[in-house]
Amino acid sequence: MSPRDKKAEAEQPEREDRKVYLKIEDLPSVGNATAAKLKEIGFSTIESLATATIAELAAAGIGEKRAAEIIASARKAIEISWVTARDLAELKKSVGRITTGSKALDKLIGGGVETQTITEFFGEFGSGKSQLCHQLAVNVQLPPERGGLAGGALYIDSENTFRIERIVQMAKFLGLNPDQVVERIIYAEAYNSDHQILLVEKADKVIKENNIRLIIVDSLTAHFRSEYAGRQSLPERQQKLNKHMHKLLRLARAFNAAAVVTNQVMARPDEYFSAMSVLPVGGHIVGHTSHTRIYIRKAVGKNTRIARLISSPYLPEGEAIFKITENGVEDLEEET
Image (spheres, rainbow, N blue to C red):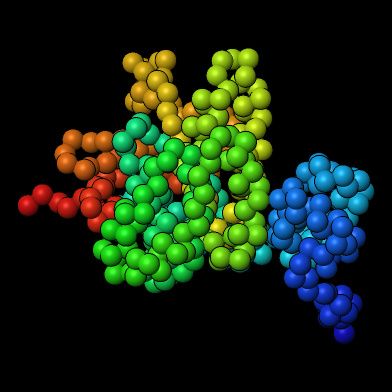
């Protein structure tokens, strides 16, 4: 018997003994009382526990040693472990993409909005950020062969910009049943920054029960910007934003969902020496956590928009032109 066969035989009992845990109460070291405490602070699924930190579980009054055991058992249950680069390439095949409705914009961002990452759209008021979010909330429900993920959307609205009428328009244009489309969009309005944070922290159960494949926060920074004014509040604001975005990212990875956030902008001090006269709010915290950042601005021509890819882990900077009409996000028709 070869060394490889011996190793496989030795590992076989471990694979056979692997138990399937469906609820957090089933995990070792987690009983009903502990599960109740964990659910109170937003951990309702094994996936959310697997991506939690020891400090976060400590908020439920759980000791560090026990918290580490719970996290380890949750990670083992969903097989989070070290992998080779080749294995990682195989895992990446599960990454999905959602079409924006524009082939030009899809091409700019590598084929559509990617799951397991955060995509940020930022721009001035009226640039079309919320329109893109509405379109993605509809498109995610399309079958994969049409650029969707056959899943639902979780929509957190902090600026009261969500409109069901717009969803219905977009759904009809795509030939979808509007009643079914709106039924698969789970909506919540965030009334302040703490409420917004809480909605994301409590979202794991909703995501799992409704096959959510897209998580939208529109806008990410509006409440934080208004509630934490002045330099003296900046450290606390950035700390909360950092934790908020990392929780969002962990949800996206745990459930193979796409996370999309919109962001406000502020004037750039050196605008005369820069190709971009505005900067997204949130500084380096938002910039480092968002994997793909797209600047949206109005262009000359009715309903025309220009999307500029500012940063991506693997894509070059570039621009794409599209339009926003009554039908939704579409490609710009070439002039004849």
